[in-house]
Image 1 (cartoon, rainbow, N blue to C red):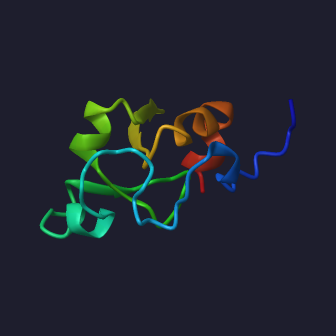
Image 2: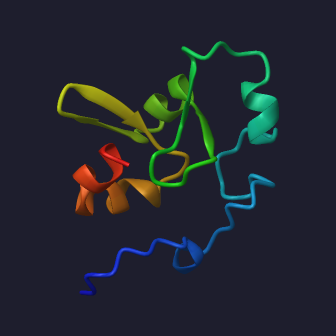
Image 3: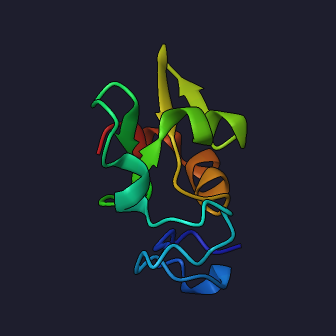
Length: 93
């Protein structure tokens, strides 16, 4: 197991160029999903900065972790294991 957690996400078989083609099943782009939501309803993925997340959708899909009293949401299933490997790295970023 490598100690390098580069997480370019290429190894996960999906693109984060955000045509949003990695299986979320929304039928919309990330920008469309968050356009009419308040800042309380969306978050930025801490593992893939720049990727916006609808909190309720992430929670329904299990794409979040609670750490030191705070909740963190992820843009896709690949981000959870990366977080799990070093949560302090991402929480303090």
